[in-house]
Amino acid sequence: MAMGFARRLIPRAVVSWYHLVWAFIAAARYGFPARKLIVIGVTGTNGKSSTVYLLARILEEGGVRVAAASSIEFQVGERKWTNAFKMTMPGRGFLQKLLADAVRTGCTHAVLEVTSEGILQHRHRFIDFRAAVFLNLSPEHIERHGSYDAYRSAKGELFRALRSTVNNRHPTTIVVNAADKEAGYFLRFPAGRYVGFRLEGRGAVAAVPKNGVEVIARNTSATAEGIRFSLGDTVCASPLRGAFHIENALAAVATAMTLGVPLSTCAAALRRIRNIPGRFEEISSENGPAIVVDYAHTPEALRSVYAASKQHWSHLVCVLGATGGGRDKWKRAALGKLAAEHCDSIVVADEDPYDEDPAAIRRGVMDGAIAASGESRLEEIPDRRLAIRRALAKAAPGGAVVITGKGSEPWMVIAKGKKIPWDDRQIAREELARLE
Image (cartoon, rainbow, N blue to C red; front, side):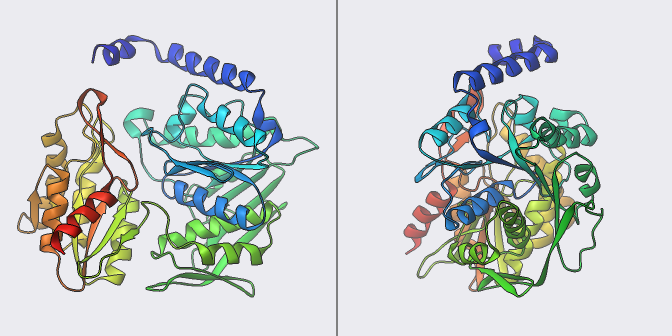
């Protein structure tokens, strides 16, 4: 507590310079490893980790030795390990060391999830990005940035960083979701090449520059068998369930093709990907109800998860909460409202309260649900394990339990930054075993 108070007394400019100096020291210590790699940065509000995961798998299918970093996991070649930091872009030189390890072990490409928080702390600095990918933008981290425009500007720093690597040897590439309302903003940054991707039927918000190409997915579908779309005469299909995966897969394919991976190889890679950890991940059981675990913690992501769930199951029991620590308090009621609109039964539980009063966080979520549909379908169970147990007990035949907010995260963070080992997927399996 005292340390946190002391940090708040330090001027922001001083904190910013501190992180910038650390970024330079780390890059210099490891010999600026990004200069020896093709580094791709992926940013946006939703879908970043999934796109990093998909792109890494596609590159591997193409015979590329790859490194990757996301909120799901880290990777250097064959070695993969869970991201247990509770942050996507760890500091103190972690990313530079990962890139140095990538160079040392023969990797040629690195795919990095880039967050606005990481950018504020200069963790993208002194990394020579060859390509920047923009997925989508919706309000998030507004308290941290001060405004939506500031949040968008922070995302734009990844694209501004490309200017430092635009040269005759290595042309840079900007890949943008052309159907997103902010497409024009990100297409304005200078680069050697531009790629706009979108689904057929979703009009381009901004035109791709003359030196760019447009990648349009046609004949899209999302069924119980997975997702499917066509690029020209090539059908791209994956066992992944959930329509939102189509756009992430398209972003990964469009980016991979700019890096020289044949479309046929991209399609072959997608066919092999059965799930993404903590992203609409289904927990199977012989006799129990279907369970879906997803990281969704923004209104747009939650809406997509609920819509996908409704497509596959007739009855939804939803477990959700909201993150504490003063983060995006406005979202709590919005998340509760979405649950009320899509779920047949709702159980509100603790998620990551940090130093905030957990009851106040839960109340924010419940207020949104109550305003939308009253209290009859709503329960408050603070203990997340007991909440999952209750949800399983309430599940109906042909229905599913949808657990959102944490995905594959291995910790729950409570007061004073204490981390409690936690995995929604493992807890769900344990509670399923009690029923069988």
